[in-house]
Length: 309
Image 1 (cartoon, rainbow, N blue to C red):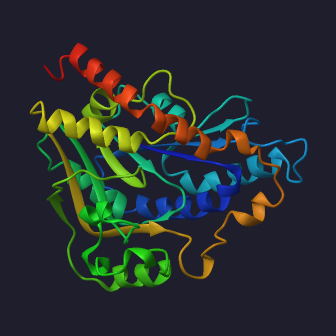
Image 2 (cartoon, rainbow, N blue to C red; image 1 turned 90 degrees about the vertical axis):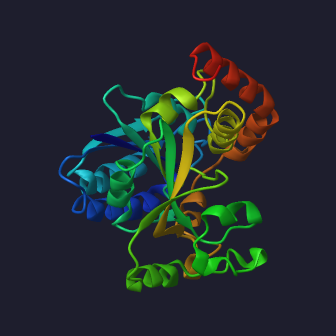
């Protein structure tokens, strides 16, 4: 079995990469012997986002640190790349570029999320049990800002008011996970919800049901697009799709607790000259404004491939 993990990060997220790479290093020792994990990472140094000539920190600072941190992934087959062009580049590009014929499952990791060293192995073992032709597996999450996330929220935190979702200590939540003796379990989700935080997608879903369109670049809510497209195909066309929730494994933003409002990014951004007009939020708005068009195109693609009739 071949599993590919994909992670894209900006230079100010380099310390998030350190934490994520460290957790992946720990995760390696729990992996089943019949699994080959490929990790593809991209450090985005695009001059479309950053004016390097005016920045106090040079590209070489981040490239050197990236090289050093990557030693933590030496147990894996690590594909390490740096983007230094002047075009829009983001995780949509990485998603499209990461497709490989030998890969059975894809995992997307957001670099600013905490996850336990057991999660990777549990996700992979869970995938072996799922009979559906198209599926997604997600871990539990901490409370989010509205009810739409409750479907995959850790039941221990469902009573947290929506207005208080940011007021947590990631290390306290981690402690509760460590002392919890409950076994992980897999349950079907009634209404799909995921966000590319640490999700597993089987090959049929990722490559055929909800692939990234050829003309998509930079940033955009592929997660929202893929949820709506797969739900349409399931409920209106009878497609064999299902999302599953891996219980007793909870992920959450690293910026909670003592790092709230500061995190591991602000001290880098102070020394970088950002180009705001090309920032990811702007690209997301453009993507969202075209969502119905993209969904119509996605449905046509599924019809041409005879995935739906």
